[in-house]
Length: 167
Image (cartoon, rainbow, N blue to C red):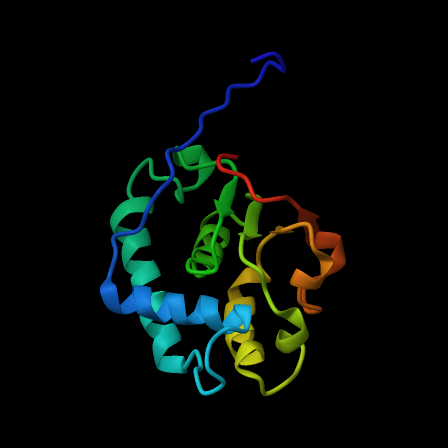
């Protein structure tokens, strides 16, 4: 490379699907976007199902020797990018293994932060569960629309990036 650094791009790691989890994460996307029915909630049980699925995938595929979540000195990634609100439970795993490794969270969906910022709404409840893990990321990337970023995200962590097909 022109800058004199070796760059290895990990292939995108796709979790092993689980139909029940897909339904939960799809519902959660709809909640966060404000298009779910007002009765739809991300329950503790649903979130536990998602985090269990994330942990299983991490142990099976990404924490193996040389896997991307291993410490960089052990062959893991130098930077971890979580590009979806389905998988933010990977952030504390990555930080526990390598606290100084940069972790970037990218929210590639429209978030109704006006609803997220109202206590008691389904959006606020869902975001609260996700935020417990997302807040550990070093950088938060959003679509370039300021209203998509909830008030809980410190502005000094926010970056903007338009939709892209490959980054």
